[in-house]
Amino acid sequence: MYQSPSSHRIDPNTGEMSGASGRYEKRLNQLAGIYGDEEAFAAASARDGERVVYYVHEKRPQQERGDLIFGTTFMEPGRIGDEFFMTRGHIHACANRPETYYGESGNGVMLLENPEGETQVLEIAPRELVYVPPMWIHRSVNTGTTPLVMSFCYPSDSGQDYEIIARSGGMAKRIVARGNGWAAVDNESYRPRSAEEIARVKASIA
Amino acid sequence: MYQSPSSHRIDPNTGEMSGASGRYEKRLNQLAGIYGDEEAFAAASARDGERVVYYVHEKRPQQERGDLIFGTTFMEPGRIGDEFFMTRGHIHACANRPETYYGESGNGVMLLENPEGETQVLEIAPRELVYVPPMWIHRSVNTGTTPLVMSFCYPSDSGQDYEIIARSGGMAKRIVARGNGWAAVDNESYRPRSAEEIARVKASIA
Image (cartoon, each protein chain N blue to C red):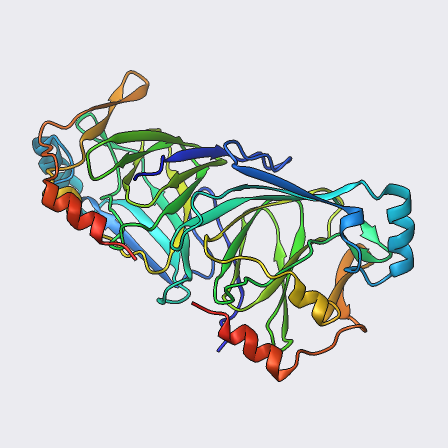
């Protein structure tokens, strides 16, 4: 009945995690619809659609309640138009589950949004831990010129709901290049969530 | 109803974590009974009982179920007799809750024991993540000559039971100095747990 303790070496540059039980990757052509500049996306995807934008190593020790899932995310630097490479983003299917992200190398931001549409942007850098509280939609963005590598940890019964972002036409803000840095700008396609959708999220708890 | 997202800078050398909601420390004179050499402990405690052996920075975002507690442990190098400085050790009061520990600086080991008395020892070093599965008693040990700093994460409804170790006369193994390294040796004071105690632990789940 006892699971085995385990140790996992994390390479801060490649995001490789020894002893991972799974790995998945997202290629550019799997990320249609998340970037504002659809023309720039279509051109990049036609040119280099098989390019891996990010990959994840993870250990899922147990699917049941009360355990933890942990791993790493590696994200290439790059842009589609003026918008930086980013993850699809999600809220936890069990919405009152949190997540920690810890910077291993590179520089980026965590873009956070609660169901009512309030935004927060927190910088990620080596040795910087970002706490994503329960009920917050979150997406990480590589605002640097080198890969962004983070380690993460979240409860094993969290689940992921990726569609909440698509249903609102994206997140309320986009992270775009400004000079040598970044800026959070309004996403013109964003549609605030209905009272019904907000109520549905608030009820998706345990 | 929404908690605020937060970011926390971790100093790998001091274990300071910005934005912590709490900090506690353990002084030598608060650690009576955990070391095998009671004479050496009494002498060290008389000489330098106020010495801080380890301290913890933590963020407890929410006490309720489903959230996460995270933080850092800083432990001085040192020994009592031939036994290395270590934490008191615990099993989670809700026994089927896990924990992750990630090496920030220094070198040590995680000493793990399940209720039946099976031992595992996993090395902790920078970039090495140790997964403590549900149901395992665990204690960290600084086997190096510099401070051991780790960051940790565990479910908010875990709780700590420190007395399980005292009730068995300590953990089954002790981590002692051997040459320039360490060895796990039998703890002669150890008393295997009774079937009743094991059943009690196995029932302390949720």
